[in-house]
Image 1 (cartoon, rainbow, N blue to C red):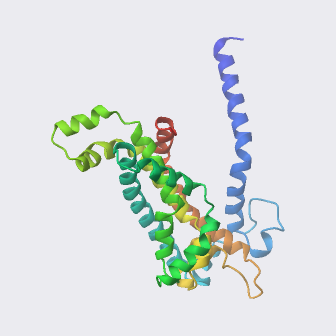
Image 2: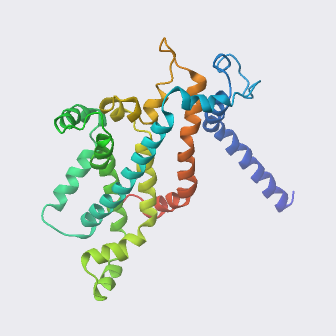
Length: 280
């Protein structure tokens, strides 16, 4: 057996093996798309992934059943707003913790790390009373403020700090010699170099906000203020039983922004984890 033939067989074996390993991850997605095109009675009665009759009307019925377009917009603008604010605040806080020396910086870092260990469910009750006292119940403000200053914001700050720690000091010194202030060094030197970390924090924050379920369930009552995770659970008949064909069609529509974000940012995500890692 010559060398080229051996390489070709090895490559085919790798492709077949990886394809087999990918089946458990890809199959639920394909099943979701298949179910979105089936009727309610056919979702579980037929094992075939190819529907006998494609019910494209499921997608339009999703918008007629409840204000799905409004709920879609709610999730989109909240996720974009939370992501933008998180990137802004976490990059500044991460830079300060990594590059500035001030009294109590170690204590601040310790408190941040401690906050990461606190389960989200533990803080939901005090957050509920806090938001009620502030008059923010049945609004979107808790869905913006809690991820921003909660565990997700802390995680973003920690990741940005770890990345800024790896930046060479010589770059900052060169910026200072050019007359830049401390904020100028952050904005014109450190921030442009942290694009991979910002991409990673951005997509993680967007995913977290997009999939947020517990907070909307606790703080929002008006159906027009629902976000997508709540809206998906609201496709039920008069007996409270799920309308699976509508839920699957709505879920398929809800996946689209995630796919777009991942496709656009996947390279930066890989680079970020490869370059920065997690350094203590």
